[in-house]
Amino acid sequence: MSSSWNIPLFSEVINAISLENRVHGVRWVYSSELDLAREPKFGRVGEMYGEDPYLVSRFGVAHVKNMQSPDANGTLRVATTVKHFVYGSSTVGVNLAPMVGGINDFYNIYSVPFRAVIKEANPAALMPSYSAYDGVPMTSNIAYTNHFLREELGWDETAKDIQTAGIHALEASIGHEIGGTSSFGTLATLGNNPKIASLVKTAARRMLTLKFKTGLFENPLPDLAQINSTVQSAAHLALNLNILKESMVLLKNDGILPIKTTGNLLSKVAVIGPLSTYINAGSYAADDYLTGSTGCFVNNDTNVDAMIADAVKTTEAAELVVLVLGSSSSNLDNIGDVRTDGEFYDHVDLGFPGPQLQLHKAIAATGVPIIFIISGGQHSGATPIYYDYLPTNRKAGIYTPTDWQWPVLNSTARYPFGFGLSYTTSSFSNVQVSNYTSTSGNIVVRKSVKNTGNVVGQEVVQVYFGQAFPVIERPIKNLIRFTKINLEPGASQEASFTIPVEELGYYVIGKKQVYADTYTFWVISSSDDADLQSRLSSQARHAL
Image 1 (spheres, rainbow, N blue to C red):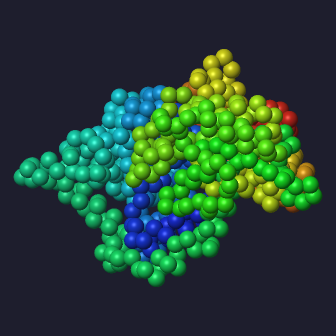
Image 2: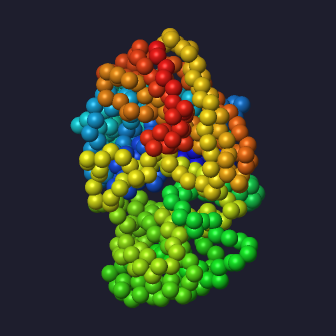
């Protein structure tokens, strides 16, 4: 959903999810996930908001605020659990593997979303990662769980753990063990130990406080009438469809899209691929409106050659083929069934699972025009091929040029962060950056955006900044603000951003400072240098 870059719409979606959880009697959820998706082979990347600390922070804050939605008495609608502190870039993408990093990476990269969410939204709970950071298991990492979370940030809520020794976990402020009592259960025989008894009382007090905060004791049971009037209501289904539409990314268009809905219409379209009929949506089911060979996943008993030959035959009889490939992640109840992605399912490379690439090559060889959809199974995949919906989102994750290696000699990504096409075009002009020379106060960035196309569209306006001579290694461009605007054909609108100067600072060995230097600001539609070079007026330098 972060690919939508639409915080207001996302907030509405999370509010609806929160309401549906509440009426079902769910008072505590294990989200939001604030990991940074910087290792694309990791199977849980699909659960994350992306690779950028600022983008993840904004969606994380919106999630926690709208999920918890405290009432006038401070009662939380649904308690949240931000996770996994800190994780997302495990060694070679293997789940539970350690993360390599030091104190500067911790403060400037991995802890940034947690700092923002704790300060702005006060999540009810936090889950440490299941692995080690900088050689120390996070479930017993007192320096980060106690000193950073509780002392530096002043956060005094509940943390959760699924592994490690009970005493070390309690000392590190871990107060709840998921999936059994393998660690904490062993502490029952130590009740006469004053230190252990004190740790247990502290953990129990935090857990009971959370239950009171969610109103569990006052209203312990769900109400059937509320369930029927809230769950899958028309308003909630509309929100679901809208966020799915706005989260799709159009990467390339050679004139095939959009498909015409008037005039000379296509008589036959082939829809092919293992994800063409499979919907990974929990208990939801697909409408059975397709004819012909249905999509299926391949196992050891599948005759791949025969299936591909059948797909080629179907393609040759069509005027257009919609090829839907990708990876599937089912819930934990169905783990092992039709699953190639998700928790416990990491990747050895970045290619498509099984014989999907073989299928793609065979379909492409027919010469029939292809609409290629990379999907996780969402049923919204049909909507971006018509003019009634314009794909205007931007990528929030990593795309690499090959499936077998990271780029070594060339640091340019095939699809850079923030990239996405639309059925309309836009232009940026008249960039202005306020003149500030102190390390306090605000910087105001303004820019005019115009829809230069023939249809209504949206544009994601992204603001990046970079320091000329940082004292430690820093990104050339750092995302610092964004907004998404609607524009009629020919219409213009000014996008304005207020940025506290202190946000230009960063941490060196745990201490934050804004350095006097020259700063460059870019107001563009993606982080790509090519995009920047086409709009030279979009950059301005600012000296502190």
